[in-house]
Image (cartoon, rainbow, N blue to C red):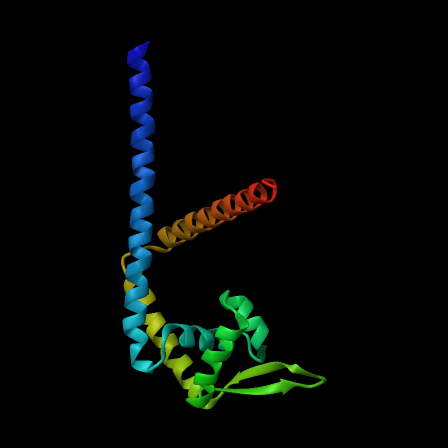
Length: 168
């Protein structure tokens, strides 16, 4: 009976080890992808946070400063500093929202749009390079797995937040 207990814990250890290796590979891949993207967009002359702002503004035209801060999960003050630099560089324009001088609408300028267009080409090349040996079926499987990981993480995060609230 003791032998079976050892075998059972060995199986659990091996399973845990595979999950750990998978997470290490996932993390290493994410870090490498970040470095590749950062090096690739370095020619735009923008920092990563500024670049992210431009990309979000492209996908969300006429976004407000508050919405941008919420999307980027940073303080409105941090967004204000980044936007001031982008505005000074000629990448964005800010204007007060009618009937509410406390809110700013931010739009891309032609120069900002050029950076976004250039970045989209860079991202397309990176995507093509990353998935060059993948079949459509493998891509669909990969997307499905990432969706499951995301859902599991979201559920874990919800559990963590619930347990924090009940520790009062």
